[in-house]
Length: 78
Image (tube, rainbow, N blue to C red):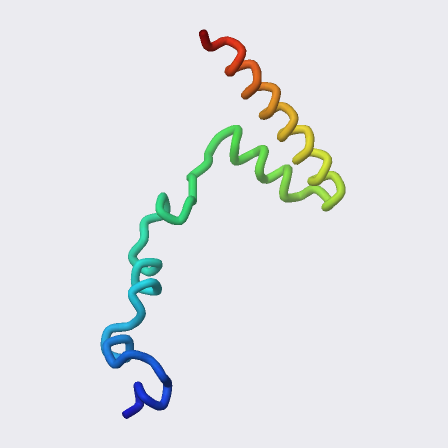
C-alpha cells in the first residue's frame, strides 16, 4: 500500500535502492578517490589556500604542462 502511494517498487522499501547501496559499500577507488601524501599533499594544501583567480591560473599552467607532456609521449612512439 505504501509503495503504491509513493509510486515505487515494494522491494525498494524493504531493501533500499540498489544504486544507493552500491554507493554505501563502494571502495574509495570506485569513487575515484586517490590518497595523497608527501609532496602531493603539500601542493594540494597550498593550492586550496589560494584565491580563486590564482587557482584558475595554476590550473591553466598544469593543464598546459600535461598537454605538452602528452604530445611529447606521442612523438616518441614509433
